[in-house]
Image (tube, rainbow, N blue to C red):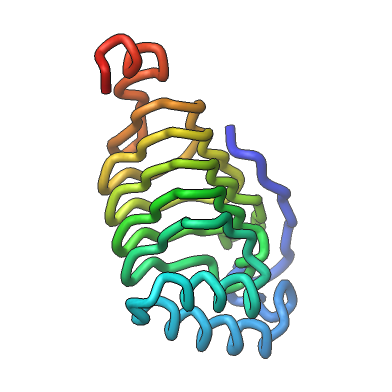
Length: 168
C-alpha cells in the first residue's frame, strides 16, 4: 500500500478544483523551472534548479537524465538520495487527482538507486538503497532495499539476497 494522505472534494472532480489545492502562481513557477530543467544537459544546474526553486531534496552526485518530469504541483515532496540515477523521461508524481478526492504522498528514493528510462513513480512510495527499477516500470508500491524490480504493474524480479547470490 502506498503512503498517501487523502483529501475528499465535493461537486466537480478534484482536478477541476486544482487551484483550491495548490496556488496558481506556484504551478506557473514550477512549470517554468521544470521545463528548463528537463531540457538542460547540465546535471549540476538541473539539481540546483530543483533544490533552489522547487524545494526538492537531492543528494550529491545524483543524476536526473534528460526529459525527467518531476511533480509540478508538489515537487517539495520528492527526496532523492546520493549517487542515484533517474532515467530518461521518467515521471515522479507526489499527487494524484481523482473524481471524489485527491491524494498527496512523499516520494523517497534512496542512495545508489538506478531508475530506468520511461518509468513512472506514483505518490507515497519509497525506493530503498541500492535498488534497481527496470525501464518502463510503474512503481505503484514501495521497493525493498537492494531489490531489482520491473514491469507494469511492478513486481520484484530479484530480492537483495537473490541479487547477491547471483553476483548481480
